[in-house]
Each structure stands twice: as structure tokens, then as C-alpha cells.
Image (cartoon, rainbow, N blue to C red; front, side, top):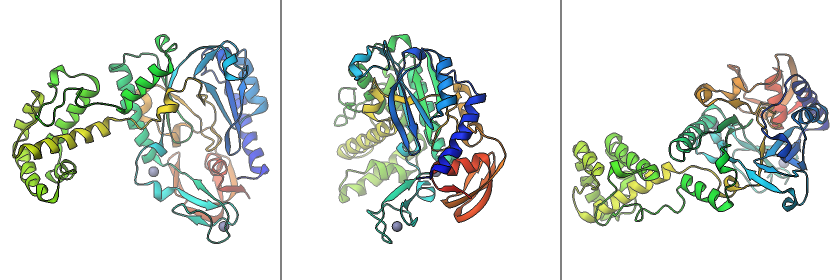
Length: 414
Ligand SMILES: [Zn+2]
Ligand SMILES: [Zn+2]
């Protein structure tokens, strides 16, 4: 945890940002509940409300919270407590993707744990520090690649929300830290019940998807016909066809033979070779509703089941079931600052998402130089310039880089 001095320093910079940037990203501001956070604590106080956008901006400039979130919900009386007395009117849908929810092999390169007492660092988590017994805290430095992975998921989600679920009022912002938030504000979804929201989440995550009920019969080598399939069923078939067209025989064997015994695996090798030699024919069969039989029926049944399950897994979104469907949750206010990075939770238009780079486009501060002592930080890039890695050293950094490290809690003002 940073000392008071670092927190004051951040606040002073945040104050300057809010003094010259008006936040206008919350529709129906008077119906929203707000929550604010302090250093190391994203939500310290909730049940705050503002009658106008002007009041919200006055609060930001005077109180200068390091984090500010607002409700997906609309209330008659957003500051009332307990929750039931707020008078719920409706709620947007908000989905969050974070680098910690997606697989990327670079995490162990840039994330670490550090002892709160003696500062010893660890690659992997342990119960306590083996040097002094102190508690370990995790420090995450999601890189371009990690955040890029959440960007891919965000694109896929937006396509499904628009093409398959028919939503149109979609707003997007960088989370300010390690991912993206997607807000759906269609009038039609405001009144959806918790159950209806869970059903949408289940559709997105593939939870409870039944192959049998969706027209897949692996025993009899049948699948839905491609021109009759829609939504998730269609996407699963598309993935299966993609695998048949594009995958190496090694990949097909590895994923297709997952539940086979050692002796069956030998026949599966022949089966896979037959597919690879007849890719075109296999694709035509799948498109017409037949799972190709290139060998024994039991091998084929098990192979296609494994490929279909893997396709479903890849079509599932890594979003949390409860928080995604939660009517009462609060999420980062778009265009405000994130207290763990100093970055702006910037609103992005969907067409610009592809080129959005937080380490360039979410920066809030100038180029003044600041001297900081850094306990540890991996290499990172800001505005195209590389910094670090740093280990117990004093350096002079441009504001955005210095504030990033101070906010992360790995730096102190020198
Ligand atoms: Zn220690
Ligand atoms: Zn990474």
C-alpha cells in the first residue's frame, strides 16, 4: 500500500484532470447510485446520488475519488438504503471482460506477488513470505497481449448482442485497467428480470447447452444441417468445420481422441488421417447434417463429440454468471480515472476498438518528469516508449508512467 504522500500526489493529479475534463457519460444521472473508492479499495462507500451531471462533476473536482462507479440500475431514490427502498425502475445490461478472465501465457512474465513487510517478490503465490512471514499481495501488469485478448472477446460479444440477440443501443468503454465494459441500454432490456438476465448470460457462456436438444446425436453421427442452424448451434458447427478445414492432424488427434483408451487411440490416428485426406468431403457431410464416418462408428462418435465440446468451449464467454446478471451492481463510470493505473476508462466507439491501445489512448497526464523509487515492475510501454523492468531503483519517469507505477502500489515518490 502506498503511503499518504503517494495518495495525495495521485489525488492532486486526478483533481487537475477533473478540473479540465467534464464527465458526461452517465445517462439519467439522477436515477443512478454511485460508489467511490480510495487507495487500494475500489469501493469504499456506496449509496451516493447526484441530481444533475453538474453535481457529479462538482463532486469529482472537490472530493476527487480515486475510483468512481455507478449503477447499471435506474432508481426512484438512488441514495436510499437498504437496496429495497431505492425503488428499482430498471437496469442496463453490463458485461465486463478482464485480462484475469482470459488465458494468456504472458501473465507469469509480468504478474508477481510481493511481501507487504519486507518487499521480497515471488513469481508464484505462497502462503506467507519465507523471509519474514509477512503477507503477500499480488501485483498485475496486464500487457498489450492480455488486454488484446479481452478485446477479441469484446468484439465477439458485440457481434452476438447485435446479430443474434438484436440489441442496438450498445456502448463500450475501456475499464481503465485490464479490459473492456460493454453496456447495453436498449429500452426493451431495462425491465428484464434477474432470471431473464441469467438466461442471456447462459446463452453467452454456453452454460447448460444441450447437444442432444440442439440436434446433435453423436451415437448416430448426426448434427443440425448448417442452413437450418442459428445462433450458438451455428457457431459450434462453424467451428467444427473450421477445425476440419484448417487444423493439423496432430491437433485433430490431440483434441478428438481425448476420451479414447490407448488401444482406441491407434485407430483414431487412422481416422484422423482419413479426415485430413478427405477434408472437402467431410465438410460437405457436416454441412448436410451428417458427422463423417471414416473408420469405426465408436471412434467417430467419440471424436465428433470431443470436437463439438471443444467448439462449444471456444464459443463460451469468460464472464461471471452472477455479476453479469446482477441488476444492482455498480461499474466504473466511463471516462473517469482508474485509481490502480491512472488511466482513463475511456469511451470507445465500436469502429475504433480495433485500433484502441490503452497505453496510448487512455492516458490522462502530461510529460512532466517525476522521480520515483520503484520496488519492482516488469517492462511496460507508454506512448510507444519502453520502460523497465525495474527492481529497487530510483528513476525519472514521465507523468503517465510514474503515476501508473504509484497507482499500482510499486512506486514511491523519491
Ligand atoms: Zn517478507
Ligand atoms: Zn500479458
